[in-house]
Image 1 (cartoon, rainbow, N blue to C red):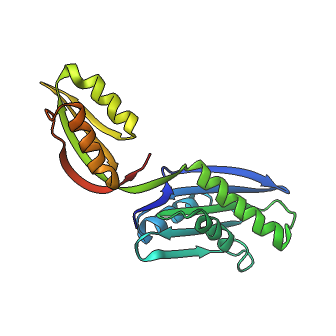
Image 2: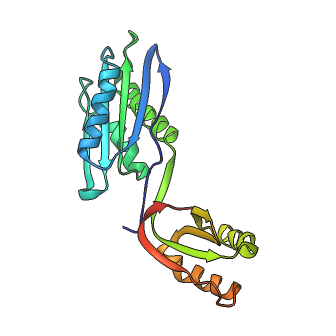
Amino acid sequence: MEEYKTIEFESSDCFVEKKSKFIGYVKPVKSSEEAVEFINEIKSKHWDATHNVYAYVLKDNNIQRYSDDGEPSGMAGVPVLDVMLKEGIVDACVVATRYFGGTLLGAGGLVRAYSHTSKIALEAGNIITMAKCSVLRITVPYNQYDRMNKLLTDFGANIINTDFSDNVIIEFSVRQTKEDEIKALITDNTNGTIETEFIRNEFLKAS
């Protein structure tokens, strides 16, 4: 897997459908244990809710889990999960909390409501693409800092850290497939006076 989509941060959103209040919570998770901890946290927070439906998808081993939590089978957890799968989201957990408002939504209405809850939760958590990236470092004199910073930014590199000491040390990341290209660009623009140091490979937010 060269890249995947996930959620950037924990968030929530809500809406009301025929007097039933639906609250969608989402959180990035890396394991079933993290997902279950988040689910239990929301269940504890909304102990008085009619239902706390959930679904989560993990990248490793393609784990997919869901629960209808008392709603008619296949009409709550499955729609929440389906939205995640259609969006290609992994390493995330969605909990859809419902406070029943007294009016039945019907099978179709229930599916639409839980699908929408999942969708607004994911949007609130900010869907991002994670890609295999190379983390690199360059050390530049102060008089070349602005030019090199602009070169990296224009290229689409993600500046991770800048350390202003005797010289300026810039740590940045680019997609792994563009590592050779940015190294050559730096060499060409500095007449070979600045070397690009490789630090590590990891999945990072891609621009």
